[in-house]
Length: 607
Image (tube, rainbow, N blue to C red):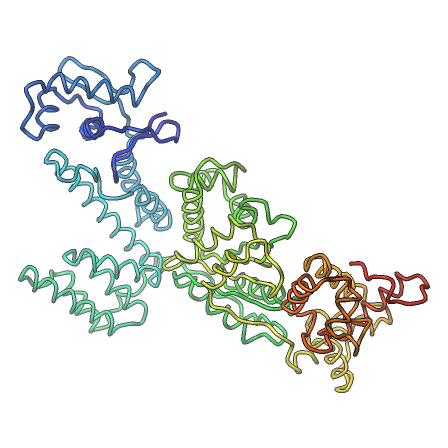
């Protein structure tokens, strides 16, 4: 199927793929025929318009050449079925569904904010997404296009105003205000924009700002046109001063049931949960927000993310959760698919089809059909609009755990999204294991630098006491808590597992598996180096450790640097394991592995 676009530069597509209409004369002919919406354009009118009233002597022959070229571009191997010759001239056989301008007008016509404001908002968003620039952009100075281009631009501005008014009807004033500020700056003579901005500010408890906006509108109109504001602006000013009851949110606006007074706790991290709550609040008010949760392995990043997820669900947000995996870091858009697939699968088929059409189509191929048809920029743009469309239904929280193992394509999507969060009801909360190597360190650092961050460390004493009590079921002795904290450095995971093993009189097997996993991530030589530090104890000088581990100077320095950044080792002389309980676990594992060897130092600890 062939489709045409005039809401921007003139373009043509066949089955979703662009058609190269290369020559300026062919593009001008295509634009002029599209302007007539399938009607015949007489030869003399085509000649008059294409040559702007100054046709050459051989204009008719030149026109026929243009027609032949355009036919070859549109249908190089077929009989002409689109560009048709008629007795008086030429026409394009194009239906309303094939032209973006007609599709735009139909979507706007169907939008009914009075009966269905949420549905109207979706239709208006889809309509406005069709615009790529000024209508018939490259022919804006041609006299034959100016009336139609002006008509379409007026329809676009009216659709923008209807969309913003619909946001107010839905009670989403915070979402509308940034767009209204931009709209009034670019179109200061349109009183509707000023009226909506003042009303949105008033409904956001910003009465003084609302009155200031109305004064700005009065100043613009007086300076540019020598006119006073119209009746609607004057009446709104009077109503704001009187705090008229009718200025409140319309009764038809949907409202969420107030959430039950649930208190989500996060042991020792409630102040960090408050930071995340602020990000959720930004999304709820229609503006985007992001937060990076960073910490060494075992400090409780995932638990904090689970608490944020629970808080978001209590507050009525939709939640998408993804967890990066080291084994899947080469799977293109793997994390993005984790985010979007469950959300899309939960939608009715018809609603999902509407969401995955138009500008989102390249993204739909990646996240829903598991194929890639567009270039990276098209996919990223499509993913952004999938995010926007989903969030406009209900504010959205996207949670991503262990971003250090994210695939590069999804990292690019995250960076693309972070730069475009303003005015989008999305909260993005991401965790990163500090020091854990990444296959894409520069890209990861760049993306993480775009977010405000909180850093997790050792548990505060009060939180450590509460955690010990959770594991044992009794109020612990202060000295016992102190010994446990000293053994684990207050690392949340190690503390919980250490206390559990003591309470059950068993070996800390989960600590052993945790250490083994980290050493595999740290790379070759890490297990040997850590074991050497554990065995040598107070004699663990760098030279002694390197010799026992069998690591040369540069290789030893590289492995040591990784282990220090991960928080497993403390640099210095002697080298030390950061947590005594980890040293004890490594020695126990080595002893078991030695199976009675005379010297434990001869049997390497194997992760």
